[in-house]
Structure formats: C-alpha cells, structure tokens
Length: 459
Ligand SMILES: Nc1ncnc2c1ncn2[C@@H]1O[C@H](COP(=O)(O)OP(=O)(O)O)[C@@H](O)[C@H]1O
Ligand SMILES: [Mg+2]
Figure (cartoon, rainbow, N blue to C red):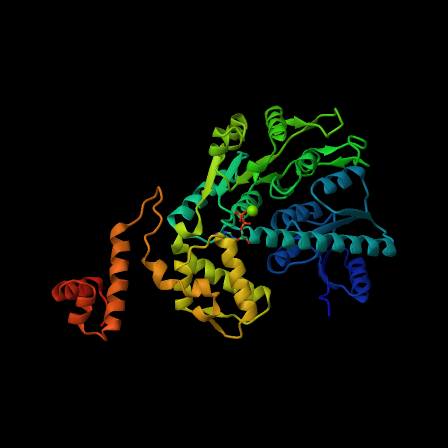
C-alpha cells in the first residue's frame, strides 16, 4: 500500500477550505487544514508535507511569506498558491519565490486535480533524484576509499585539497591500486559533481578511432562516419574527463590534446566549428611517464600540462597495514552484494593476505575475496579457503625483507618481527625447551631468554 501524499491546505475562508479538503480526501489524499498563516507555520515545524496549497491573501502571515519559509526550510516541498484577486504581479512574485503553480478562484476542480498530480510527481522525481545522487556520491565518498597507512593518508589530504578546484590531476600507480576510484571520488566531491564524469581508456581504443572518440566527428569526416557524433570531451563538457592509460596515447593525438588544453577549445573531426572547453581533466597512468618522456615516446610539454597535481597510489605491498581493513571492507561489501549473511574473516587468513605481495593490487584482492565468498560454505574465511598461493605463503614471505620506499621502513620493527617469528618456530620445534631452541638458532640460551622477554613472546 502506497503511502498517501500529504497536503496542507491553508485558507482563511472556512467554507471553501472545508469543501476542497473534502474533495481532496475523497480522491485519496491525506489533507490537513490551517486557517491562518501562523497556524500553518506552527504545523510545518512539526510535520512535513508533500504539497502545500495556500491562499495568497491571509490575515497576518501571507501566502508569500509561507512560500518563502517553506523554500528555506524544505525546498523539495511544492507550493501552489490560490487567490481570489488574480493579478499579474502577484503571480510573477509567487513564481519568483519558487511557487510551482498559481491558480485563481473560483477554480476548476478537474484542473486543480491535474495541477496537484503534476506537483506531486515533480516532487517525487526530485526526491528520487536526490536519493540516487546521494547513493552515487556515497559510493565515491572518501570514506569508501580504505586506507589508514601514511601513504593513503597523504593521498586523502591531497584529494581534499584539490576537490574544490579545477586543477588538472595526474594519478599515478600500478594497475588495480585505485586510480579510477580516486578520480571518481574527486569528481563526485567537486563542484562539478552534478555534471558528467566520463572515463576513456586511451590504451584500449585503436589509435585511428581515438581522435573521434575524444573529439567527435561530423558526417562524412571519414569513411565510416555515417552521422554527426559528439566526442567524449563534448559530452563531458562542464564535468570531468578521466583519461586512463594516458601513457598509451598515440603521438599525433598527444599533440592535438596539448593544443586543445592550451587553447581551451576544440572542434569535431571534419568540422571547423569551435567548441569551448570547460572540463576538469584527470589522467592516469601505470607507466613511468618521465621515462617515456626520456625515451621520446611521450611529449614533454604535454607531460607538464597533465602533471599539475600528481597523486601517487603506492602498490598494496608497500602499505600492508591497509590489507586487513581492505579485506574486511570487501568481505562486508561482497556479502551484501551477493545477499549472503555476513561472513567473517579469520586472523590466519588476514595474516596470510598481509604477507602476500598482491601483484594485481586492490583489484586482485577484491576479486579473490569475491571468488572465495562465492565458493565457500563456511561462515569464516580461513587460510584453507584462500587460493593456495596466498594461504600458504605466510611464513616465507613474512620473513623476507620489505620493499624500502622513499618513506622509509622501521628496520628495528622488521627485525624484531623476524626474530619473534624465528624464535616461535624454534620453540615450537623443540617443544618449548629453550636450550635446544637456542641451539637451533645458534645463539646462547641467555640471549634467547633475554630476547623472549624483550619481545614479549609467550611460552
Ligand atoms: N583504497 C581502496 N578502497 C576500497 N576499494 C578500492 C581501493 N582501491 C581500489 N579499490 C577497488 O579496487 C578496484 C580497482 O580499482 P581501480 O580504481 O579500478 O584501479 P586502477 O584504475 O588503478 O586500475 C575497484 O573496484 C576499486 O573500487
Ligand atoms: Mg583503471
């Protein structure tokens, strides 16, 4: 059963108000009545309505005042004003203040019914639209980009600084590190968020088609151009364009892109009509563009145009601390998507994942978790549920030296972790006999005892 639409009827003429209220209730609306503006405002403070129909001339607070108040407090509510004394100016004023419609007394009930249906329909569309937009924005909310590692915190800080601007951004990182996610999040948090976001993979489209894909063409511009077609730049105008795998852009197009960015205008292939460019450009690459520049494969001038604000996404193995949180995030998300009861993920599996190198980065992790959930009947994901190369690797790669990055690595901690792991293994092998464990590790018993104490190893 659909909820009845709620209408607030405000009219100081009690008889006509009652009659109209009666008619509206009969056709299925939930109607409330106010005879003064003051009473209506009080009511609006505690209840919400889908539609307000108000007399324009009321003693005290007028219909226009109510309209202004409603537009301030709940702009999605439609207002229809009625008056006995029709005048062009009041009608204009009412529409300027945001009234949806304006009707004159005595009104034709059939017409009023249509106006009400239209108002409510518009109202529903606006709400639906807001809802969809919120959902979409929710998806690209910064909160949905997981990462507490320093590297990701730095990414968030930078994203926060640039979202409000129109700056050109270059997102760098290996495949699956979240480049497109970051680009979308920037767009959907920017002032352009209600305009299009278009992504184009410069590496996936044949060179001879890419130009018309980007800039469009006119009919007959080349043999297969049977009709006029706008390009991605034209469709996304006003919004954001995401040029993925920019490193694969053919040389000729690099030149054209540079020209477009410099001149802020472009034309469709085969046309001389200039189209003004109003676009936020975000590009991404998983290749070393500077290296490409050195090798003469990528134009240096274009590189500098694109690389105004770089955002670097490190590979997952350089931010292992983010792995458990990411894994839990995907388990929860995928269970929801698959409509499965929430599965949990065991510490052993998390540990195994943390020591795996993830050559395909976050995308690989997302896929593996999806596959694991699809195939398991268990309510807990343990090591056995994971693909063998991840589930098994735990001890060996936990002992290997981490990749050292420009941000540095806490060497003492890594060494302590390795010592702890080795001591635990030796103690387990020798069933807790310290002298023999020390023997295995080729250290003194006293050194071992001291280390066990310092590292807080349980025995
Ligand atoms: N930090 C992150 N938090 C949550 N999901 C992520 C994160 N990074 C990447 N993803 C997800 O991993 C997948 C691959 O990301 P994507 O942006 O397409 O990577 P890229 O463009 O770098 O290849 C997407 O489904 C994306 O939503
Ligand atoms: Mg991508």
